[in-house]
Image (cartoon, rainbow, N blue to C red; front, side, top):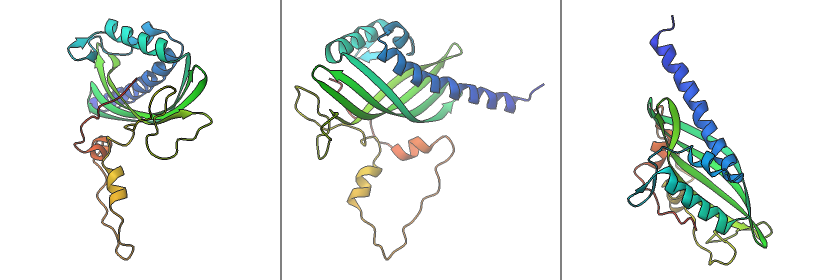
Length: 209
């Protein structure tokens, strides 16, 4: 018989794979406009807005967003970091580079998701996805400079790609003395890499339209 520690490790490995599959299923169902498959990736009582919860309301919101903004989309996933809070809760960060057909223009976007995952009745779901955007720009117009979110027919605005991680601003505000060796912090504890990077930074207000 397998001892409890081995069973826990096997469960962790299976959970990591199930969570990675969530991210891939999210992209495929979104791009193929299978909204039932899409909202089924979220917890049944997913929060959709202030005082609003449920997959039906999420489906309504996603339908409106996709139908009114884009003709087609393609989401390409990058690195995926997953850390566990306990056996049934985890957090993660996923990079995503997306392409959008928006009428006369083709808009490319770079972003990341900060995710909260929850296992309910032996199955992993998204509890929340926080999208943080760096840029969105026509394929032929490089997003150089400020206000990199540049959608057709809208005024440019700043994204929130770096806002969860205070290291971005700290890096640019503090140039070290090249004559002095810098201090080096200890590596983050296991399962706390993401939280150590984020520190106590609150979630930014996300503009999705």
